[in-house]
Image (cartoon, rainbow, N blue to C red):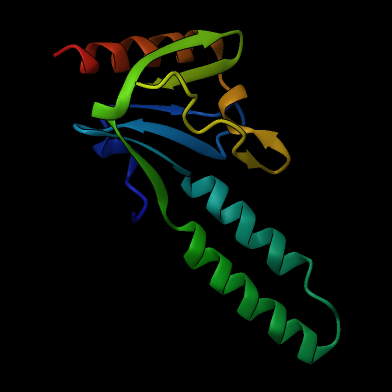
Length: 134
């Protein structure tokens, strides 16, 4: 799904480095790059471009394609979610079968679900649980 502006979310939870965020929408949770994270990813590709003109052109084309690819979020339907809780810095979203949602998603070598402020993650988990029981 296309990325969602953070302001449209009922509640949002950015990672500690603000590269990604989990958004609570009316019927879904969305995991996506933030504007900052997407810009950083594009800059990283651009800045690592080779000196050779042909290779630099190819690197820019790849960077543009990656930018389009990552300008989307991963949506998860709230009806399929059992609960949300926090374990340290980790936000744990558990589906109806007891499996963790968005587990092992990495950005820049970091597990996204293990990269939140504990206080912010607790507030977000509480908001998700309220949404599940309304």
